[in-house]
Image (cartoon, rainbow, N blue to C red; front, side):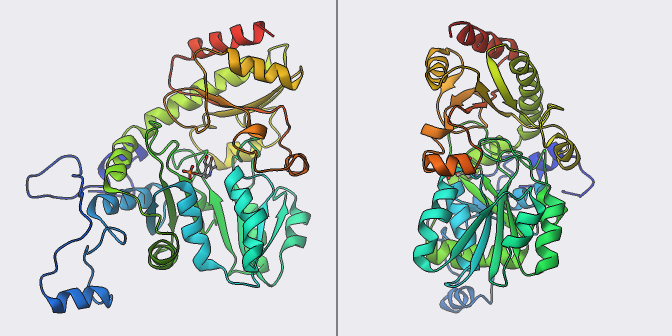
Length: 397
Ligand SMILES: Cc1ncc(COP(=O)(O)O)c(C=O)c1O
């Protein structure tokens, strides 16, 4: 059914197809822990890897498998692994790649828990991490060592919307050592806006909790890469090390969410652009970070590497004090004070005290995440209503 010529929405709707006994249009939820073997010999052949069959849902499940195939197609990867969270995707792919004595280069601006794993936990296992600004070519080049196994980054980065030139960093890393795995967290963009594997990236990660599911009711993640890397992430990372398996029910919900990914992303992008322009022109706002604005430092790169739009995430700083920020967040009525992003509801939060509270004040400064930064996930409501809510909140300051 699927052909590479089909459009994104068609692929998102039709890729995860299987024929069941009744011709069901949507993929059934295979709510089962294990699957019957035909015989002892067949069971042994499956365990020996000589025969491919579903046998235990931690290693494979038909509903989850259909979803993995769809995500692999949308991200232009050979294969995908579904996990129980974005952090489960991250740890399932990282652990098989590294050993004591290895080195990782990571961008200094990352989602809070990813940063925590790199900055506070990996050194206990003898893995060193160097944080750099990957937009700084010289800094990146001098951070790479013969022990470097992974280069890790996000673009647009959470929470300050920094844009990294993917082709350029891949070129630098792979020229230094073709074996370095460049990993890009593509959560903020979604494959509708950006496909890092087509730009030289080796592994794409997602918190599917966000845009891929899109309805704020699931915690989930994905790894997308070549078949060999996904096999290691599945059969070593997930099976033996993290156990971060996605349940069939969550896979069903994400398959449903994917059917509207294109139209949802179009609306997120359109509304975010209008809100960014509104905030830019407001006298009480100091800075607006949205890659769609020509004033954004990474705008030209984003325009080149993101197709179809610039996403639904905006961050901004107020001119006033930190108390003004709290006052604004407490007073909004439609924009909901909550973490997470990528759902139908507009959510607003304060990274320094919430999603990025894993950073110390010094680390926040190095990562260029200001204490006053506010992060907005633009939802699918009518944009005039979101703007009116922000307008009323700002007027109260
Ligand atoms: C960019 C990014 N990556 C990864 C994660 C982790 O995902 P999860 O919460 O699904 O484990 C998040 C969560 O907010 C995120 O924003």
